[in-house]
Length: 207
Image 1 (spheres, rainbow, N blue to C red):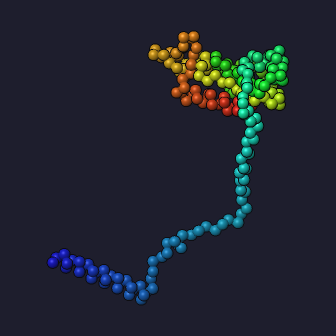
Image 2 (spheres, rainbow, N blue to C red):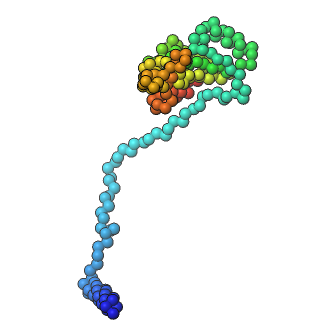
């Protein structure tokens, strides 16, 4: 009974409040402000402004040759690539055989780079300038030869000696060496991956 009485009392107050609101709002014509219209929107400035025009990105033109359906290549060491006598022999082979590709040794297993490839690292000991390298590669491309860069990735004495903490480690915490005494970079280190990645990127524009 008390619950029913409370509900009825509440309904009476709600109805009375609604009636009073309608009566006095019509008598005195008051209303709540429209908050949406009350927000002042600043007028557009008539002063001329300079708009920065962002240029469209320049598309990268792929100048690489199409990979031959059947690759018949020959490996060329860095020193052979710079040797004039070997170049003559290579030209003779290209002109008289079905060889259509050459694999140029850019980074050898000891980790040294004998060409100026545009990479800032002490392991670059350039015996051939960047312009000469690009000219030599273009020479073979003009002859229809597909050029391939060889990068010996993780066997690297040069970079390992510069960064022993990036080498594969022995249990005593020193750089590990295989049975031939070779040093190896750890494939788990991010700096190792970035070093190889950066090298591949600069070569991608040349080879």
